[in-house]
Image 1 (cartoon, rainbow, N blue to C red):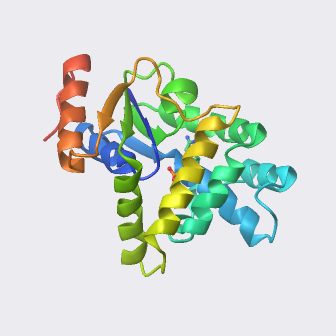
Image 2: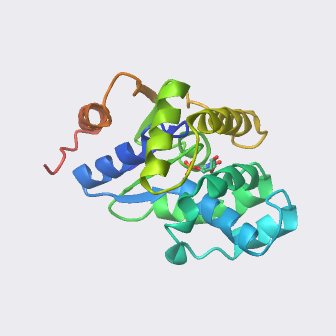
Length: 212
Ligand code: DC
C-alpha cells in the first residue's frame, strides 16, 4: 500500500504522514528532508542554492542515512531547500530514491509537494493537507522559537508566502493538489482529528484496518 501526503508548509502534513505510517505499520519518508539536506550541503560548501552545478552535485551524492536532522530544520535550510527544489535536475536526481522507497515491500507513506502528482501517481490513497497561511505561520513560529531560534512572526508569514509562491509556481512538479487527492483543511481541525479522519478514509478505501 502506498499513501501520498502532499500539502503546504506547516500544514501538518508531516505529523499526519508519520501518524498514518504508525497506524498501518508502513515505512515513512519525509521527502522535504531530502531537499533540505541538499540545501544544507550547498550552504556548507559556501555555494549559492541557485548554483545549478553545486545543487545537482549535492543531490547526486546525497546519502539519506546521513542526514543531519538538526541542521536541516532551520528556517535558512527551509528557504534554501525551496530554491534547490525548483531545479528540474535536482528533482530528477532525487526521483529514483523516492520511487524505490515507495515500492518497498510492506508499503510506504511519503509526504512532500509532488508525491500524488509525480512520484506516486499510482498511490492507493492521496491526501492534500492545507490551512490558512496565518495559522500555518503561527505553527511554524512556535516550532522554531521552541527550538531557541529567534524569529518574528511577521517574518515567518512573509517567508511562508514566498515559499508557497515559489513551490506553486515552479515549472517542474509544482505544489498542487492531485485531482484524486482528498483535501484535509487543518485550519479549524486539530492535527490529531485530521489524522483520525485520514486513517478512517484509508480503511474505507483500501479495506486495510489500522493496527491500533
Ligand atoms: O516540507 P518542507 O518544508 O520540509 O520542504 C522543504 C522544501 O522542499 C519546500 O520548500 C519544497 C521542497 N519540496 C519539494 O519541492 N518537493 C517535495 N516532494 C518535498 C519538498
